[in-house]
Image (cartoon, rainbow, N blue to C red; front, side):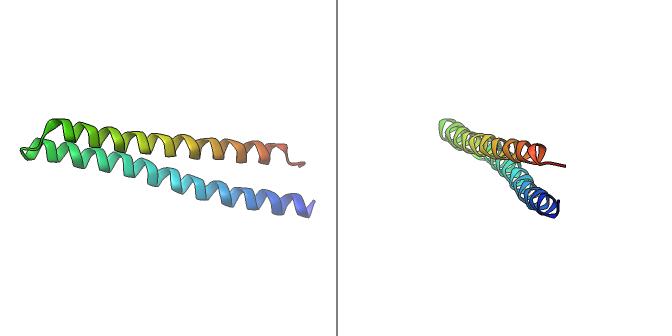
Length: 84
C-alpha cells in the first residue's frame, strides 16, 4: 500500500511539472505571436517575413503543446491503473 502511495505521489509531481511546462508553452506562443503582430502594426516591416515568423512560432508552440498533453494523458492513465 505504501508503495502505491509513493508511486502516485511521484506521478502527481511529474504531472505538475508538465502542467507548468504547458503554461510556459502557451505563454511562449501567445507572447511571441503578439510581439510579432505588434511589430508588424507599428513598424514598416515586410509582411511576408512577419507571417512566416508567426507561423513558425505557432507551429513550435503547437507541437510542444501536443507532446506535453500526450505525456500528461499517459501519466493520468498510469495513476488510474494504480491499485487503490
